[in-house]
Structures are given as structure tokens and as C-alpha cells.
Length: 290
Image (cartoon, rainbow, N blue to C red; front, side):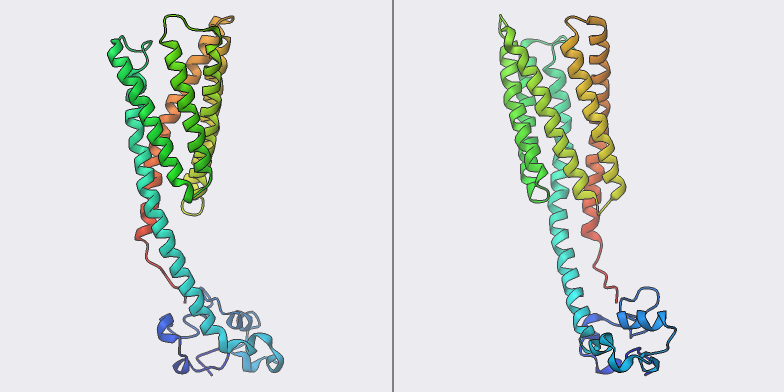
């Protein structure tokens, strides 16, 4: 009776070996990490065990004590299964975060090659840059779609990114012609809107899958989203007003582009950190609180 609060003998417990239980007062009945409601009740009442309690004859908790070990074993098995499932999911997300991370480099390079206003390149280089840029965006969108099993917001992000790619392809085809239609500007607006929506879903999904694993990094993703969307909006507004307010439009466009570039660099860093956080959960062994 001295070793347990409820009066059961540890050596008679059929689940003790499976639970790797060190004994009542060192394990489930521990004041520090124990989860046994009977032990908690005794500690709160400053009792040595249940026998010294004047309510023990009709105590509901004491009547359920015979099932306590089986219940702890069930929870331990569920916890281990849940961690194994999370480890498999984390392993998949690790590879997908890494893929998103590495896709950013050809995206940035192809973006430079396809922009004749930034670098004085030949038409061949510009065409190659456009094709590579579109191909990288498609690969990025497909990766997001595969990540939808972890968070459905990835699916929304991938779909809007594919629509952005389609719109961007039409815009580049039209802008490459000898005569650009007046209505072609609508594709600029539509591309910006689709990009913002895709980015909104993607970063919220990143934050969501990391919320319980790395809350600090999850919060940083949320903060990055606000800055990124603000930069995209400033850049888009600047492009719209530049024709009738050239100075203000130019300043807004440049400020927005600088903000977007900074956000892209931070996003690359965060993708690498997210992959590392997901990899960490695979290496953490399951620990039974008992």
C-alpha cells in the first residue's frame, strides 16, 4: 500500500512491462509528470493514499482504477502511432520544402534572363528565360498541389499559381508582338491578383503545418505574408499610375519591387528552415510520459 496511491500492487499489473512503468509514485503517480487522476487527487488532499480518504468507499475514480493501466497503454499506443504517422508526413514535407527551396534559384535566374529592361540580352536569351521561368512556375505549382495532403490551402495556392502562369504566358506573348493591344494591360492586373492570392494561400499553409512544430517560424511566415502582399500591392499600384503620375508611379513601383525581392530572399531562407524543422520531427524518438 505504500508504493501506490490506489492500493494495487505493481507486480500484479499486466501492463507494467509494456508501459515500461517504473512504479506508481515514480511514473503515472509522479507529482511532477504523472497523469493519474487518483494520484493527483491524493496529492491535492495531502493524503498518502486513497485508503486514508473518507470518501474512498464511494469514490468514482477509485472504482475505475483497475482500468487505468489499460487506458494508459491505449494512449501510449495511440501516441506512438500518431508520431509514426507524423514522421511519415514530415518526411514527405521535408522533401517538398527542399524542392520549393531549390526551385527558387532557377526562378530568380530565369526572371533576370526574361527581363530585357534589366539586362541587355539577345532575343534568344530572353526567350530561354521566359520558357525556363514558366517551366519553374509550373513545377512550383505542381509541388504545392502534392503538398495538399498536409494542408488544403496548398491546393488553392497551386491552382491560383497555375492560373497565374497561364495569364503570364498570354501577357508575354502579347508583349512580344510588334503591336501590343490596348486591352493587354488587363493581363498585368490579373497576373498581380492571381499572384497575391496564390502567395496568400501558400504562406498561410506553411504557417499552418509548422504551427505545432515550430511556433516561432510559423509566426515569422505570417509576418512575411503581410510584408510580401503589401510589396506586391505597392508595385501593382505603381505600375497602374505610372502613365499619368510618372514620378510617384516610378517610386511606388521601385519600392514595391525592392520589397518583393527582399521577401523572396527571406522566403528562400524560411523554406530551408522549414525543411530542417520537418526533418527534426523524424529524428525525435517517441517518449512515453509514464
